[in-house]
Amino acid sequence: MPTNKHKRKASAHTTPRSAKNAKSPGLITLHPKLFMSVGLLFVALGLYIMAFEAQSNAMFGIAMLSLVAGTATTIYANFTLPKAK
Figure 1 (cartoon, helix red, strand yellow):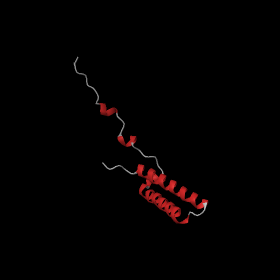
Figure 2 (cartoon, helix red, strand yellow):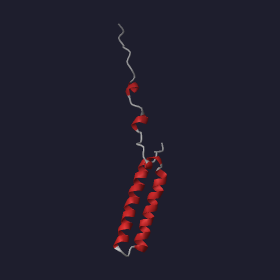
Figure 3 (cartoon, one colour):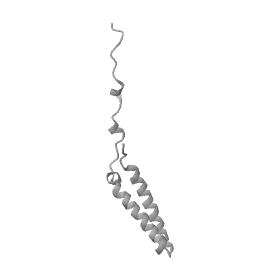
């Protein structure tokens, strides 16, 4: 009987990297650069409304909603960008 038995490589039991880093299908994950520009457009619109058009409480609210939605969209789209190696 041989003293060294044949052993399998540990790499045969690992999961593939593509399955680990798979992105969920969604509109923002499919087009992250487009949604980054849309988010920045919302931020610019919110800043414009805040600076020049916010005489009433309703316009101030729309400006704040635009700023929050634009910031959240931009950050989420930035997370879904493919990482450069």
